[in-house]
Image (cartoon, rainbow, N blue to C red; front, top):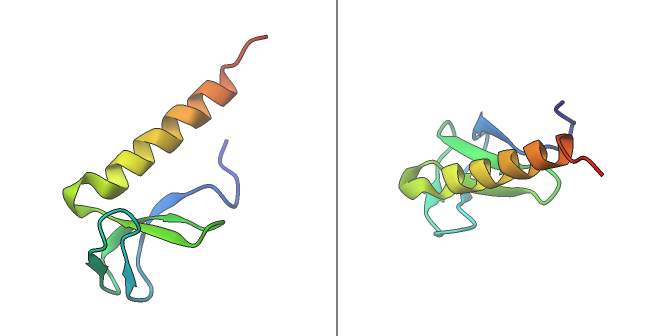
Amino acid sequence: MRRGLDPKWMQAKYAGTCKRCGKAIKAGERMFYFPNARACYCSADGCGGKESRAFESAAFDEMNCVL
């Protein structure tokens, strides 16, 4: 189940900088975005992919946690 502040892949509306590697992200480029922290990660060099996989793994663990 996705929530409003969950991070997601999207097209950049504005220019920005990758939080992991510092690469410039131009408007219109694909990026992985954390709305709560306003942090963006580029799709090059695996920065966004690493963050995406980490989030999906944590979300999966949270949904399947059995006490």
